[in-house]
Image (cartoon, rainbow, N blue to C red; front, side):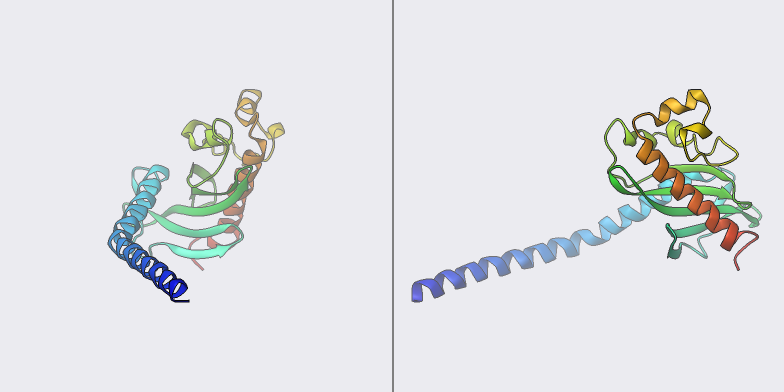
Length: 188
């Protein structure tokens, strides 16, 4: 009996020690991890907005969590007039859920997008991390939803990654619909 009690107490002490150690490591690293995540968002935002504009940080990130729109940022001209919006969108591809940042002009036209967190297949769906591949969506007047909507030269980009293409298309159209129904003409 004392043998089992001693073993149990030893295991409890070991677990308590490592739990304390892990909480200390978390306490030390959490601020740095948070700062790196915020910097990654700011870097990503700077990749999708025009160089002559800025994010309105007074309003900051507006959380939505509706219809595939996680949140949005207001983009302004130098004179602080509305230029457009950056939407943080979620969608689903072959590898599961992904996050994409998309810049839309104030009239709802997709101008630029950037695929962020994703688990797409390397060399296939991952090609949309490349600016040349994902810029395909902004190069058309209407966001393409299938290969039939693309020029023959662009349809090669979709080959092998049609599920990811459709997921991105759906997310980007959802963002456009959100702007046209909720944000167009300024905040309501």
